[in-house]
Image (cartoon, rainbow, N blue to C red; front, side):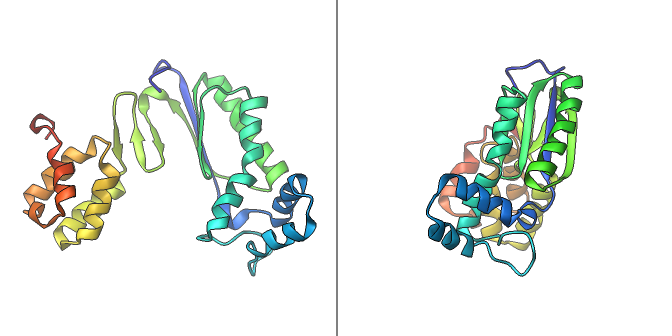
Length: 214
């Protein structure tokens, strides 16, 4: 984002119910292109079975690997066919950065068609906006100069502090550690007199915040 002018655009997309929509026949075909041992492919497919015609189980460690394999053609299409220089994907959430508006609209249409025809998937939503307005991606709202965690996580943290739910507090402080939200978290913890309830490592994390940031 810092590499490009704030007046250029980002295109953010994610796929509707990704794991539940993975086509097992297409996935098996991807395996067979690289693995010639048919019996081994059948064993791999045993870990994809569900009661529904399509989809693979969420939570299965192999499902995470299979998901990467399934969207590998998408990565190649974006990098090789669309010639995108700045592209990031985390599972089914992906963003293209540093393009003009006309390109963003054209790429959105091509991507909708590609995932429909080649992967039997569809987008849940997509966003085109100027880089200077930030990008909502993988749990953070990111601008060129800073990032904060999402409002949902901030509200969840305040609720956890009030309830003295230490596990949730520690988890969310870890999530906010490398963001501008950490200063606000320190303020909330002190306000509700919950600082001394936290583990020493978490206290040290909060104490790295300079007083001028509060």
